[in-house]
Image (cartoon, rainbow, N blue to C red; front, side):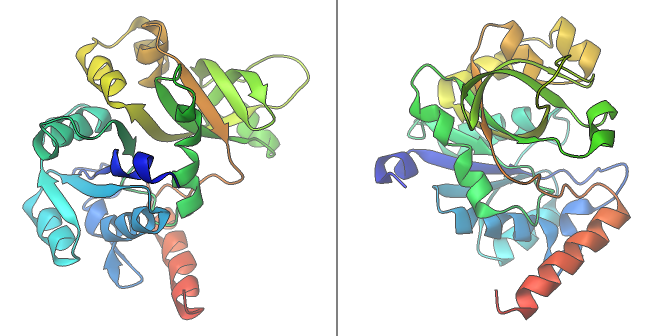
Length: 254
């Protein structure tokens, strides 16, 4: 990894206590550690820059601090993770030293560190404002599932797209691959600043997809194709699966 990029990159991990489907989610125990600490450890293994966890609850703050990670308290009333990470950014880096911000969701305890690193690749092109990730869909049911967000993109290479649209519909029509969007983002600082200053847009509201706000405002999002979708922990069943995965890897001497 380019040392210059690492020095200018912040990994921000938003953690919200008020999960409707899994109350107290950030503190759920996975292989002996709170979930939010497992996510921070994956970010540490990615080795792409300074890591800060942005929390809204003192119990989570204390758990992260006890594990030795940097943590900042943010307001509880943020509408989105991007708003939370922007508040954290202004608190931990008021002088603007960081030029790139990676937003790693706080419910991805088993994410491959290489997947986090992959989000930086599209920003090697100075024209790109925001980078994100996708996986080609192989499961037929996913193609029509509205909970699986699709990227509609113009191919730039075998493993990169320029995003034209994001949708819950089955798109694009016709023969060819469909892509499952992974909601992990790397922003240029100025792009994040602009993004959070914009009001929610028409298509964003219609699809319930925040990233459409950036596209509607004319910002460029490029998408790196990776191999696997990280497990997002939203339900008790997801939590059990994450526990199995990380218990197995720790038993294997990971």
